[in-house]
Length: 239
Ligand code: URA
Image 1 (cartoon, rainbow, N blue to C red):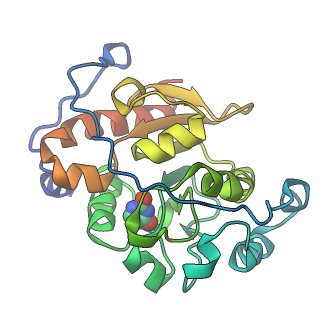
Image 2: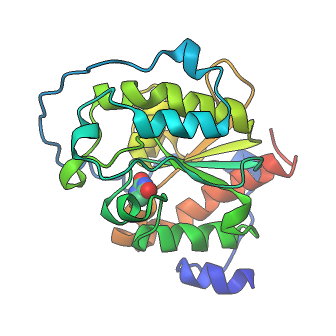
């Protein structure tokens, strides 16, 4: 079964990687995508003390009602997150696109199909993990999220992490990695390393975004190595 999913990921042979053989370098970085300068006024930042008290349904309602940044004006609906709310695995992407906004669920399009293959290659089902994004609203024209939008949404993501208490957080792509890890470092220097989420002990591993892997299938092997590092953490074989 796993072989089949690995084949979908373009990986035909699986060589187990030892934890101390993490090599960073010789990696084709995710190209910095073109960004559009956008004038943005933050109307209101969600009160993080208040958000910290919310349970799952209240938090989801708060996200639906959010007008903290300009993205609320163009959205048709918010995309809160989906999956098992007691999952060991929390997977965080960048922001919903058109299909995700239409369906109200993260990772529904082509990159969602690859993400499902990646999850299944790890021996899991999509329903066994929890998937969300840094932003809960779709940026117009699929542009990159801007800083103020990420800031405005952060209290929601933090509360999702608190409620879930995952055994591992897997970050997909540069935007998720840089904002959750609060760094400007490039993917080539971040992926496959083990971090902790803020002041918690929750391990965090970043890997390449499935949309990037679709454009650069030669990088799938590196992504698979990152996933193995995360799998070893969850299984207790690495810390
Ligand atoms: N890309 C993301 O980062 N998130 C989605 O939900 C879909 C595509």
